[in-house]
Length: 114
Image 1 (tube, helix red, strand yellow):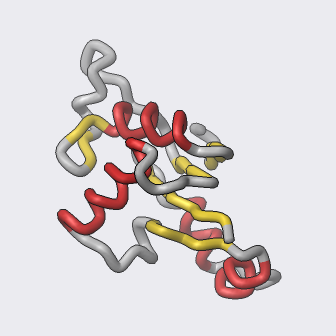
Image 2 (cartoon, helix red, strand yellow):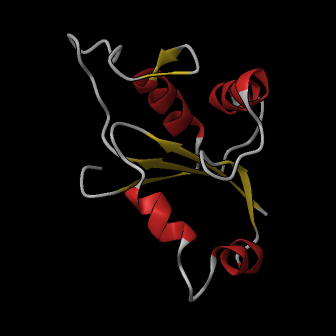
């Protein structure tokens, strides 16, 4: 089973909506048929707060294996390349993206702005 962690970065959720509304295959069939373990998705993840943050930290540090990292949207680097205009789980999204991408076997960028 391949683990999948899905993040939404700057100003995007359109691909998530398309993914969730898919019909052939539908989301459930896709996940089951391809043996995906969706460890977190912003619209599907049940974990919140510290529970979700633990998943992100574990994947970012390599404590938890990450097969596929999906990033939907833009990587906001402002101001001055600090990424602080797009904060997520108490950190700039750019930091999360850099760390998770380095741990994942496969990185998928989704969206026109990806």
